[in-house]
Amino acid sequence: MSQPLVSIIIPSYNSKDFLKEAVSSALNQSYKPIEIIVVDDGSTDGTKDLFPEFERCGVLCFCIDNGGASNARNHGLEKANGDYIQFLDADDILLPSKIETQLAFMEAHQADLCYTPWIDFKKVPGDLNQKSFKFKHLNHSTPRTGKELMISYGMDNWYIPTLAWLVRKDMIEKAGYWNPAKCPNDDGEYFSRVLFWSKKVVCVNKPLAYYRLIAGDSLSKLNSEAKIEASYKSFKQIEALLRTCNDERLLSYPKRLNYMQYKLTKKTYPVLSKRAAHNFDRIQAPSFLSKKVYYWRFINLFGLYNGTKLYKLLQPLWGLVKRQQTSKLTDNKDYV
Image (cartoon, rainbow, N blue to C red; front, side):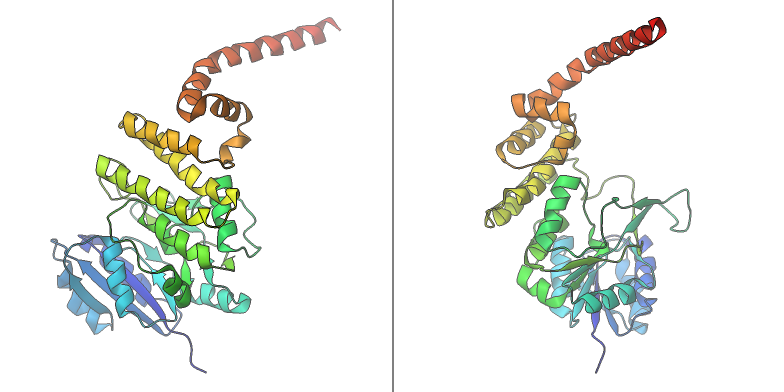
């Protein structure tokens, strides 16, 4: 019986400085057979000059007009023949055992999806001063449904980036193509559809991928009205999908997304931040913020926007009250 084929799809836009390292990490996978598909999304930095070298190593290389990373991933999916799909951004890196370890685990558990912890880094993956272990201390040993994982996103305040996943091709087919609109939350919206259809999701609980942190502008940064608007629309799409399940716990995920947009934009784009806060209030669902008992009470009474302002205004007063209470307890102990 032949081994399943894994397709690694790498979209690239003006990432010539990083692309060779990403492709090398794909070529160095211990698992075989794999096919590597690089899609140059209309780069202007000479990315395609690397293609002859890649092609000599068996990499499939394509050039398309600039349309965004999601559009490039869709082009890669059209060319892919794999039974499993690994998405890899051009500035990220896979450890050599990632595909082999995840695929074996998926087949052993008959899983639809598998994720792994990842490590953030800035320059050199092996530099301990440049990387940080990024994973929540949750129970990842128990398989979950995709919907259960999205509830965890909302209630435990975390997420899984694109490179951490290995996906069975039939889950990709059910989810459909990536939304080609340029959006900082393109992966969140897409994988909400993948998770929606996934009945069993498992985790290999050791870091097998490196996620590069890049200074300056990037699609992921909410530094323009267009990016904020695109993200906001993606939150509404996720919400609409999850409302079809009639389970309010699922809505904790888009509720969290609106909170994060409110928090990240309140200084630079206060009007749009206030809109995100109102959308947070509108979604009647539990939230990870309920663990902050007093803050949560203010939010429920006054809404996220006004409740946060009032809560912060009164915090110094609470600190004074607590210090006075502590002082009284100390005095009473001394008296006794």
